[in-house]
Structures are given as structure tokens and as C-alpha cells.
Length: 432
Image: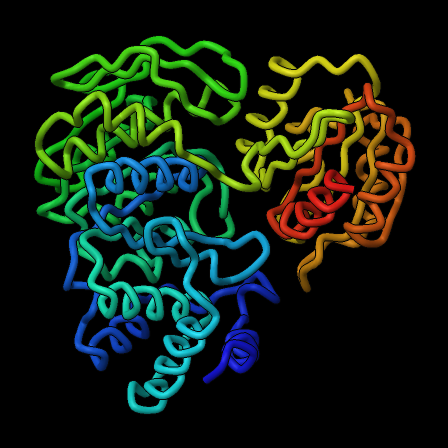
């Protein structure tokens, strides 16, 4: 199967991506696929990561820390920004088109033999695990796609199970409380897992502590970020583990929350090796972290920021970082689009959309994209004064640039789909 054929095959299986609906939760299909392939996911150790927000940042930090030790690392993440290849990487390099077509083609060939019709996410999960085995990685870093217990990635038996945090999201599948969501996320903990808990709510922490892991490390107890200062281009943090304090670690990411993510990542890697990480490797690893689409500054005159925040907790973090750390002399311009199934009023409120001088609404480029007229009506209802309706993301970006001066700030948020389409446009415009 070539790359184009692989994309067609995936699209034909993209029920959730198109409707937001999933069948009854089960690991039966992915387990059957893994079985007929000879269980490739058992041929390497795994660090498994769940959490409402911060999974992408934490997994990239963990990957860099492992690479600094000289290990070859396969990383599986979701969703992608621009190309599906981004979901599976080898030492931070995405799988090639040729290899991607080969791996997806192998899953397609096995579909009849396995007697299942896998979902889009199950296909990409199986393809990644098979590819990691084929190229003989030393360790896999695997992000959960949805919650945890019934997520396709949960066929792995993780040596380290990581929880970044818990907030209300995907309540159509779990809820209505944070405790319900925490119980689903705790499903990734296995009897032999070292459990790294980034969440600090005592009631939620107890859920993860009692999930049956072999050993538990809790933020604020066994590890923490003890100093966290704004620096040019990111944060300067001090990190504490059970054995060591790492001082003046530069993390080239924006937002105070990235210090917490860094502490979680470092604790996870120390648990993996069951030993401290040499300080020089910590400094090397963190300074190389790059996370496209997560509060990423693409330009300065005007200031252009893209952030894939798509739930209220993530949007609140985006707003906090922007309004506390950035102070443009000119206007604040927000480009926003979101998916159906979210609460647009909650999302806009968390983004503090009413505090922007201009809000440009667009339709997210997805079958589940909320129509621009509906989003704009909600934006006006929550207090946004100067609201524009623009059908496409690229047209919204053009409108923002047409009205912006060098003193203004443009923020793109609300959906990874919106950021994924806006980012290449913004980069091209920046170069121009």
C-alpha cells in the first residue's frame, strides 16, 4: 500500500473522527490485531502517559531524556497537526511516507484474518507498535488517545505509567465528576508499573495510588518543580526528585505549567532507570524540547501564537500564559474554531475571549467542525464586541494579518484542527 492508499484506508475507518461517536468501549479489536501480528508491543519496554492536558509536552520531554541516554525511542502521540506521520516517530523523526504506507497496508491485510474492523485510532496504534518492533527501538513512549482504560494503547504493559493531571473532558464517555475520569485514566496502571502522579488533588491522587501499581511517586512528595521563573523563550526551573535537585534547567516552552510537566517527565525517566539522571543529560534533553502547536510562538512583529487548547482546562492555561507573560502594545486578536460536542461558551470563557480586541471565528476543518455562524453568535453572547465570521482557517488568518500592525498579537486556538491548518499558513506568511 502506498501513502495515498493508506490515507484513503484510514479515512474509511474514521468513524469517531467524523462523528465524535464510539462503539461500546472494548480492547477486543486491538488485542486481536496484536495477536495475529505476534504481539509486537511486547518486544520493548513502554512508558505510558495519560492525563487531560500536558500529555504531548510530557511525552516529548521523556523522549528527549531517553535519547540523551543514547537510547533509540519510538514515540506514539495523537492527534497530529499537519500530517498523520507525526503520530509515530523514531528519535523525534516522523515515519516516512513509504514506511507509513507499508505499516498501514500490513494492518489492512490482517483485517480479514483478524476478523475485526478496526477504527482509525486502532489502525494507527497497531501500525506504530508494529513499526517500533520492526526497527527494534529500545523503548516506546506512548500517549493515551482517550481517557485510558479502554484506549487502544492500553494493550501495553507499561513499566512506567504516567498521569499528568485530571480535569473535566470527554465527559460524554466518562463522568460526570473528575473522580470518574480519574478512575478511567487509572486503568493504564498495571501490577508491575511504577506510577508517576502529576495530579495533586488528594482525592484524585488516592484513586491512582490504589490502582495497583508496584510503586508510586507523587508530585509534591517524591518529586516536584520547586522554582519556576519566566525566561527569554521559556522557563527556568529547579526540579527535585527523590535523590537530586536539578537547578537552573532551561525549558524552551511557555507557561508555568511546563515546569510541572518537566518534573513529571524527569520523575518518569528516573523511575524507568531506577536511578538519578546525570545533570548534564537533563540540561541537554530539556533544551532540545520542541512541541509544535502547543503555545508556540511563530512570529514577533506582529506576535503570532498558536495553541491547540481544545478543552476548558487547556484553554484556561493558554489564556493564563498569554495574559500573564505577553503584553503587546497593540491589539489582541483571537482566531478561534472548535468542534461539535464541546461547550463553546465554556471554551471561549476559558480563553478569555471577551478580553480580546478582535475575535475572528472560523469553522474547524473537520466533519465535526462547529459552523462559524453558531460559534460567532456564542462569542457575542459571552461578551465579545468585535466579532468577525470567516468560513475557513486560512481566510481567518488572512483577515487577521490584513488588520494587524507590528504592535498587535494574534492567537490561534480552540482546536488542534484549526492550529494544524493555521500553522503552515502563519509560517509561510512569517517568511514572506
